[in-house]
Amino acid sequence: MDIVKGNMGWIEVIVGPMFSGKSEELIRRLRRAAIARQRVQIFKPKIDERYAADEIVSHSGLGIPSEVAVKAEDVLAQVQPRTEVIGIDEAQFLGEELVNVCTKLADSGKRVIVAGLDTDYRGRPFEPMPRLLSVAEEITKLLAICVRCGNPAVHTQRLVESEELVVVGAGGMYEARCRRCFEQNIAQAKEPSPFLAPRVRAAGGGSAK
Ligand SMILES: [Zn+2]
Image (cartoon, rainbow, N blue to C red; front, top):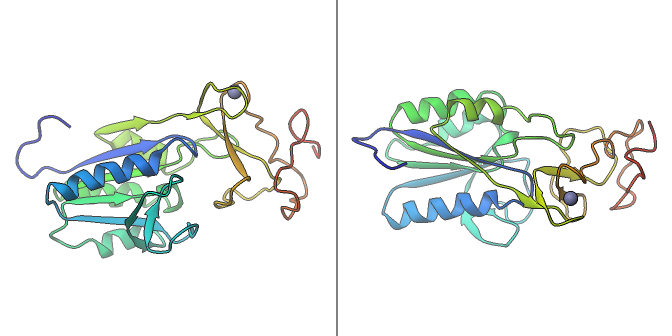
């Protein structure tokens, strides 16, 4: 954001697959705001309980203190009037209302920086992130590196069978894949397995269907 006059707010969105560095980019922007002596508040959904409970931690271990929200409305309720910059991590878990909440905050003059997955483990749009992109002033799409071939990776590959949309965290359950190596059907098994093996690789993409 180059030229911003007065106390106008706006929305920045950082999207991409897992392992693309979204949290690190969010933390970098928030740190810079804090160095500029702006009042910063950071939120993450309760569902994400990997690593520390009260801070945002990226995969590389870079941490920053955060507050917990169960749904998007909690962010609105917890934001202090004097806060200038609001960061939200793993925003895809906060529900449809997130778009309205971010819009309200930006309308009231605050800079809102939101990071989250834009597609799910099947490569489908992961609401509310796509709708948030349509109202944002600035969009950053990050790519990971495909663990199979080293190309830029746009997908989050789930390696275990489950029909749940959200299987949080846990190393070995997900990896980054490019569009060529992405196997959409691995996670499509008829009977969800309770994660007996950390890496179930169904040959040809899905043995149970
Ligand atoms: Zn690949």
